[in-house]
Length: 406
Ligand code: PMP
Picture 1 (cartoon, rainbow, N blue to C red):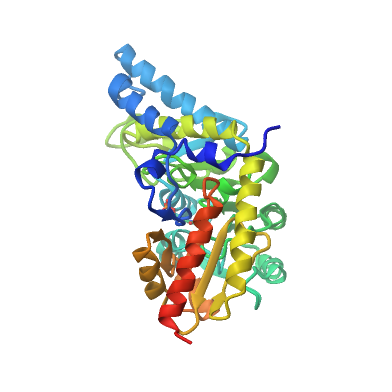
Picture 2: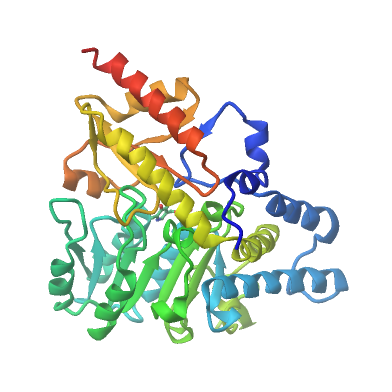
């Protein structure tokens, strides 16, 4: 096989040609888009635009076919058994809100427990909290060890409370560590819990096979995996999806409506009320179909090498405190300059056209737990070059010299 070539891969992303002076290391926030994705959006709106599942004319039938083909592409990409197990949402946040709302009153009864982890993004905390109090459901949280890893002994211990739902990220968006999700699913199911994996970061890291993982639910956003904004995926086993009360009611999700009683449509339509982000769904399908044919192992190895390269240089700088770890890491380096606020560091980097993220990264409980006001985050992607990492390191050196003159 031909080795992964970052330059060839990168050429497929027009953003970099349009912005040659920028170093973009904010890939965990959102990824850039390959030409094939942009072409798909353009093609749909310019040539095939029509609403779907409405039948009266053949333009609509064609659009419906493209949309349902995208569902199949997504199912193939994550190894789902059936396309009907793929529900299109507006993103990870919407999918997790559908899960929290939809499991309350069906799977979750007053007095039941949900288990989350300290690593979670607000999107995997707040939707559960929104309903827990009024429904009398209790939230438990798996703590971290002193070296910021998930405390797996505590995880096993907390499972003894027999939570009905266990929800955790695949990869932390702050510290980048890859959780042992297959093991966690197995342990959770052994006590009878339904499992939810927040794959917003994990989906890009590795090849996902939801059947092998055996998780009940897996959710992710299109925009972090080279696809468009406004579309995301809620995968579920058929039985698990059938437990969900629809969060949104409206057109297309029903079989029969009268003012006395409404009968819902079958899956997946029952959970897709209203007009979907049709063009975006189709473009996401096209993107994942394309991505599945890329050298994903090579992409991961490239990112891993860059991470090690950047890590070694940052580790040698005594003014920095690294919060993430270099092992088992999906491409995220999180640090602080000792005694300085992360946003000041990011501002100095921005002046040198290095795009990073600073702050609490939608994970306030995690930062409270590790006693930091926030952090600077560099997040790498398969199209990141070594020259970009070096430019970022130089800029960090200059920032450190400015902020802490020796
Ligand atoms: N979970 C994790 C781990 C994330 O990184 C993100 C995005 N930062 C989300 C959930 C929310 O994703 P979205 O904003 O696309 O809904």
